[in-house]
Length: 304
Image 1 (cartoon, rainbow, N blue to C red):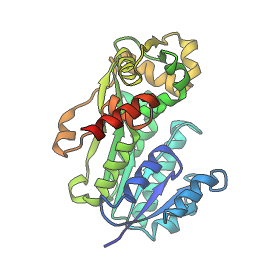
Image 2: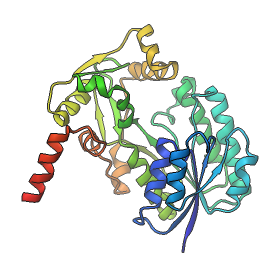
Image 3: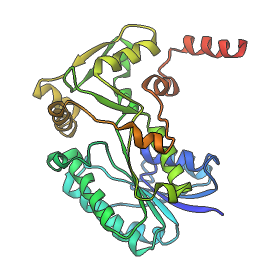
Image 4: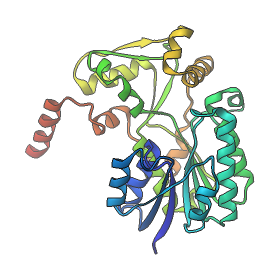
């Protein structure tokens, strides 16, 4: 039977990854409705989605009326929220509004894309996490069947420094000993699709998701191994310099510095047989290997 799923933020990283996996056929038969705030501002992505059979509609988390009717037409939904354009209070308000609408629509299953660390008590004072924490709590108190996925740092975020990394240097606003949990956003899509396919297994699950737990120097070594040249880690620790990464990121990583970094319990991943890609696997998948090396590797596979 075809399961109908509404995906919020269809043109964003997580929404796109979820749609890719829902449409892959690997997890079952899904009909996808995708919401985006700016369907005309992302015409190419929207056109691509429509070409793949996705129903794309305008949906704004600040305007619950824009998505309520669509929730009434689906079985399940994927929700992701962000504090980048309004802060944690606005993020929490948006998330709670969506949960209320999902309850009223008698939704079978809601999967929420949160962030690693949102479950820590201290996260209530961190702008990048406190909104997500409040949405999680509200979801837990609702009558919905839900799953929470908490990814670490997306490997895709390093794309902003591609030229710099290709020149041999990676900069990040963390102390030398701070551990970073890194994950390929594609793994979020895979886990979300699996959760939709097996709600009985994923009901009530809160899953921290990362493939590696590494210091920035170890991240640099991972890039070096894939790129085939030295990559040096630059630990950005000056408060003013951190601000070039944005106030939200600066505050988040300063908090993680104080705590010694991310924490990752591998047991829940093992229990669900979830195997996220390692940093190096994710870098290869996302095109960080130099073209000549990729060709050589492909030829070696043919020869084998």
